[in-house]
Amino acid sequence: MGGLGFPELVVILVIVVLLFGSSKLPQLGEGMGKAIRSFKDAMKDEEQPAARKPDAPKPPEGGAQP
Image (cartoon, rainbow, N blue to C red; front, side, top):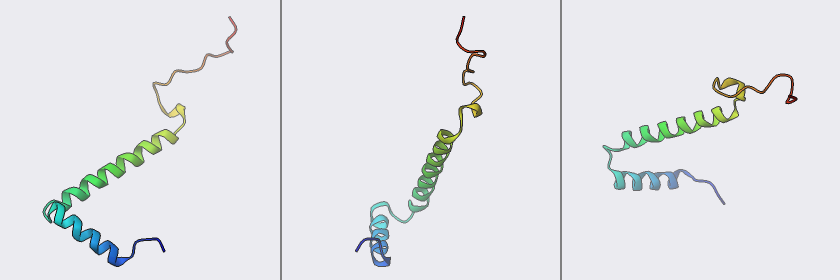
């Protein structure tokens, strides 16, 4: 139970070809690749510390005493 096998993937591919046409598949794949790449880049940016961002405000030196 669970998981996609080869027959299920073939049926999905046939449905995609029928919906979008074979000439649109390269454009669809390119768009999906760009979306996944930008999502991964955004996730990497979130994981980086604040020191990497040059416009981040620096904490005051010497504490908050006047």
